[in-house]
Image (cartoon, rainbow, N blue to C red):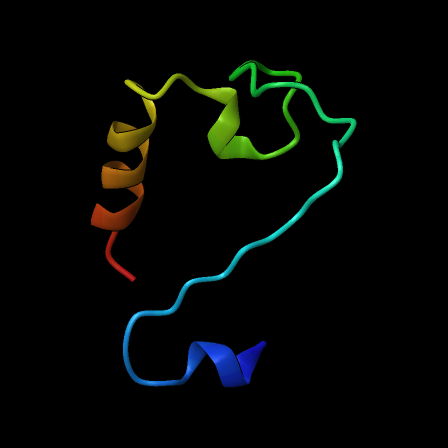
Length: 55
């Protein structure tokens, strides 16, 4: 795959996948990833606050 993605010009890849067992994203406390536990409207503000903290 790396050889295909490093060539010059447009790259078209056709993938055939199998159905998974994961359901749709619920954006609730049940999600494992922290950024999925908030709504799309809330997450950008959380990210802005985190990036504004001086190192």
